[in-house]
Image (tube, rainbow, N blue to C red; front, top):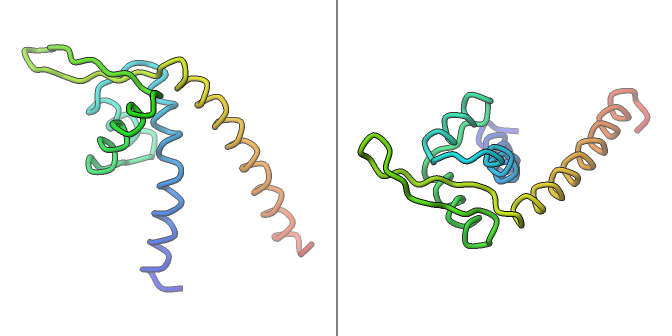
Length: 115
């Protein structure tokens, strides 16, 4: 496998995880910059060109609500989960846990020569 192939697969894997990470972090209201920083601090760096379109898409789907507020004489857009967003987050978390458990079983079987 080339580095390009690995990088493409790595990015595909991350792309699927980013929405769940964003929903998890927005259980507490934040604006875009602090959200991006919090995700990076937790090991999930997301560039602006990915994050802001994702926030708009999640808001258009009714999973997030946003409001502009002035802070330090600068307008900032704050995001938070809606009740539907919290419900979807809970369901996605359960799905994530199921996938993780399955992968752990697959990895364990593969490492122990069962397959």
